[in-house]
Length: 500
Ligand code: GDG
Image (cartoon, rainbow, N blue to C red; front, side):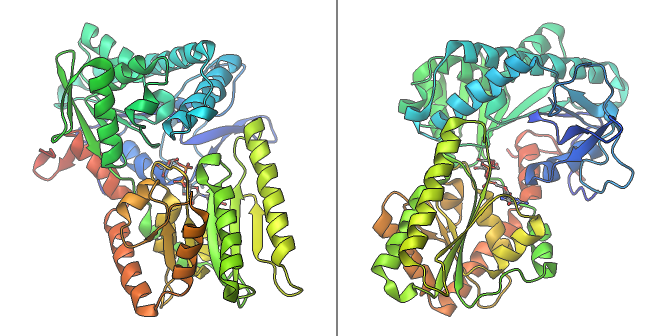
């Protein structure tokens, strides 16, 4: 395992996320086996946790009839980053299936997801779902506390630093509440950090949530709270002041709450940059076409702006007919939340729109849109990123958006292609050399695509060089390191390295 950074003391990082870094599946003999998850987050966090002899608390991806059924060890041939996570370090959270559905679909996906993406009209507010959210967060807190007690009782004498609990994302925003409470009462030593992977909305949106105060109080039970960009930090701090009346320090990003000072930090997530470069170097050619490819890669979600994107592409073909038969839009839409009506309707709308635009402009030798509804392998993805002339990343709202970063990492050709990003994604805030494109204005967006398709080579090279350099420096390892540093939990040769 390639682990560049370590936590300060052995056995002291406890990662808490909705899902474990793998899911359990039955093999043909009915035995549970681990199916690894290859996301960037797992790749970055798992080595640090494993190296530090840490624990991972999460839902195992299945509802077990017997919650005491042991977690299997990883396959001996497993080379994924979680392979080293021994089963005694895995802390599964078992939840009643109905309650889990209310928490996950009812509250997380139907309420918090749209609200935090500033789409309140799509959000459902139901107190029974919120109650399940609270209950499940308490279950996660209980399992984390059991783990903390175990850590606290072992190797006490060789540890001179406190365990670090790292909680992830909007599913678990109030877990810290009970950890702080019990830790204070029982004298368990720990530091609690939280990272939100989606945007934090402004006060006028956030206040629509009937239990807004409880979320803020839950988050403020942490020592440090990380967001992707400064805007989300400022929104959060503003909400703390306006909802709870906290004293705040906007300049230093501090919030005072019940006698404690909570740090807030902008920590933009990165990608495993070198891995994507490597994939792009070795992946075989995937596209045989003379047309320039404009590439979109998204989960099929209303926040990703797929309908707006298709309309902009239609407008491009309408207003700049010189691109007809010269370019194609390749859109990969990964199925997501397929059992939810809203997502089924969105798929239907996209299917129809693709059909209409293709029907309108296709010629015997050319179809303007190639649409893949499904998942491709990471090798294929890297090859698509490499061979595309334009990366079109135009969400209506997005915490960060890793696709924009993966695209630039894989752009190995000279001269390279062009990245277009929405200003409403975290990556639009940080990837300054991309063309910034407002997806809501169809005509303006089509002009952005035209500009990308006609951009001079030297400008493309200059922009892409800067973009690639930044993503290489600020990769996902750098993000993990920055988080540990902001927590004051980064081990260096000189001891603990604190950001302040
Ligand atoms: C949340 C926040 C934030 C996509 N299609 C395929 C495929 N992918 C991979 C991409 C990328 C990932 O999925 C998507 O990442 P995003 O960042 O775009 O979006 P979310 O899933 O919504 O993630 C987001 C992120 O957390 C991290 O903090 O950036 O804002 O919403 O890595 O490569 N992978 C494969 N085949 C596909 O077809 N193999």
